[in-house]
Amino acid sequence: MNAHCERITGSIRREMPDHVLIVNEAHPRQVLAAYQRHHNTHRPHQARQQLPPDAKELPDATVYDLNARRVPRTQILGGVISEYRYIA
Image (tube, rainbow, N blue to C red; front, side, top):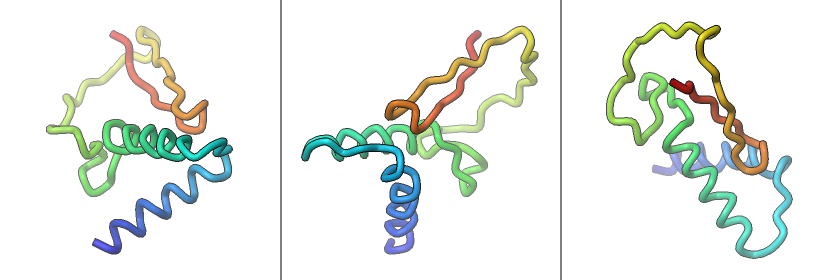
């Protein structure tokens, strides 16, 4: 379990402190909650065949025509993290 804790702590230390200015005591909780949502619902994990932890199954292997679809960006934590999704 210690290796898992060290891995997530290292990820947070590498990705957050240089980009987020903590302003009060409650702010770190909000930042960590947003990072946790992103990490568990969107960020791909190599050990799970590039699926996020909350994904139940592999998505369909569909080929998309990038000229016919838009790929919107959602900014997390004021643009520190960006998520991309297809619009039908």
